[in-house]
Amino acid sequence: MRRWETLAGSVQGVGKRRNQDWFDCQGTGSGDDPLVLAVADGHGSAVHARSALGARFAVDRFLPLAASFGRAAHDCHEPGRLTRLMTYARDDFPRALVHEWRQEALGHWDRNRPVVEEAAREPRPQEKLVLYGTTLIGAVLTPWLFVAWQIGDGDLAVVEHDGTLSRPLAPAEEDLGDETESLCGREAWLSVRMHWAPVFEEARAPRLVVLSTDGLSKSFASGDGYGEFVRGLAGRLAEKGLADVRETLPDWLAQASRYSGDDTTLAAALRPAETPLPAETPAPADAPAPAGTPVPEEVSAPGEISAPAEVSEETPADAGTAAERADGEADGDADMERKTET
Image (cartoon, rainbow, N blue to C red; front, side, top):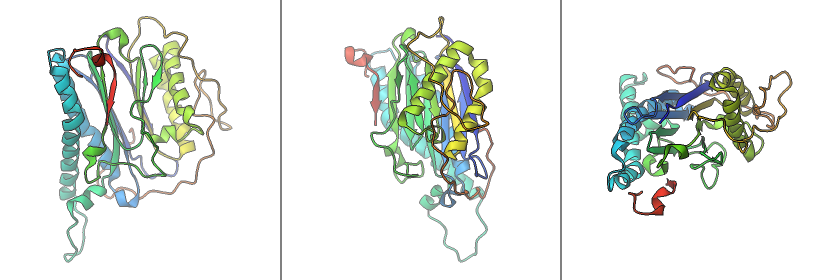
């Protein structure tokens, strides 16, 4: 399989004291070197005062776990192997991820205890974890398998081999307000959603996989705006190339952040095509942008977006620093289907 190429960036939200998002991309997508992508969005309120660190811990612990899982998929075509991998990805991987994240957060607390009066009660472990609350979206891509996990808000968008767009981990009902599932939840592993997609031939692998925090999707006035943005991104990549999009991505994310008022992060994986993408993947129609904001050619900057809501200033983390960059086995046609497990 041809090497995947990656695209990523993050901008701090308007009125925010620090960027609570974190992201990373590692690997090439080969059997021995799976491609792993992850984005996390720390909750950022006073109750979650160390959430910028929690987001970083989530990404840092997800990457080695997902890479190890991807390497284990090397022999997934052995009889029964695919079924066992899917069961592990659905049931055991979320537990392992939550355990690793909790250990990281509690270890950080022990090394960075706040100064309190001697008579003060020691917080319970769950109270400590709330300080680090964060969402997470992560994906692993190998020549034979594409798997993604998500807890909390944010978006996973996939441009399939035929140009169709899907959002396989979108919840049936959107969260109300700022409420969302979190890695700091009492039984967080039960809230992890999984997308399972075996790749039986290279030509049918996804063309583009996009992970983003909710600062991007919230910048659009309608639910269709985010989908149009991803379609336009795919079209721009096909026409202008990765270097052009890398250069303009910070401007797009900054414009989205101005409208959503939130930190905005995107990480994407592009499978280079031998031929240009067909016409069924159009760039979105031009959309209006705020006065004085440059709009990149052929791609809708987050346009058709409502005026930004009033943004409350967050409480900074009180310790540490955060960077600003943020099956089934082959026994019938059912195995050929892409599946999403919850």
